[in-house]
Length: 278
Ligand code: DGL
Image: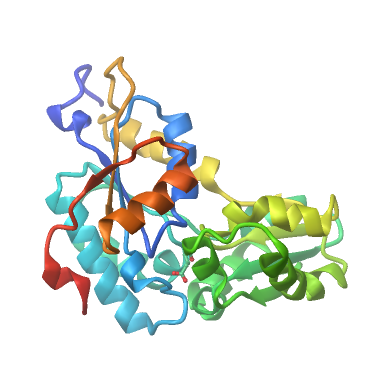
């Protein structure tokens, strides 16, 4: 049974990490849903994108990134990257003892929602090729047509803050063409970078799709897991947020500022230079 007094580590931050700034879409939902929690976000922007890397590389790199957050005293970790979850979550869970909440493409809700039984999924090539995705589809969407839309380079555009304008619009139009020509009525954003392109996607597709991304479901799951572990932060003042990036700090701060809307995001130094490369 939970003790009535939360342990001191309740004050510790929740750590989130992504290959870059895409996981800020999860940070946004956590900030809104758990306003009293302290958050520490790690962007491995120097190594983004992960989506075209080998599974071995992704596992080793995400082990280093999560260890970095554990060393910063995080009480729980959110893998705010679909690619890292599908490739490395199992390996991370095997070695870390704090709660790990992972994100995966919203296949299950999409299957429940789709009337046409056809769902389009935008994701990185690594996510689309993963056995983890196949097992999600087998479990929850075996009677649904899944139109896989690989989007190499799209996460890079978000890293470069190209969120609207003719160039990104043309690229999205091209990527979405197979989905627009199909029976799909639901579009899953299977990469945490893509919610930042939602307005442009909607400008192209109108009301054609239900667009699904799981950031608020992840925030609800984080709340449940912290509650179970009796380490919700019960402080009454607003929680703080800090950011670490493997990219040069001023460049990272500018991008984080644009995507979070924070006037001056608190940047912490990337701890060890040796972590910069594998
Ligand atoms: N944000 C990552 C995801 O959710 C992908 C971006 C990348 O390729 O690094 O899959």
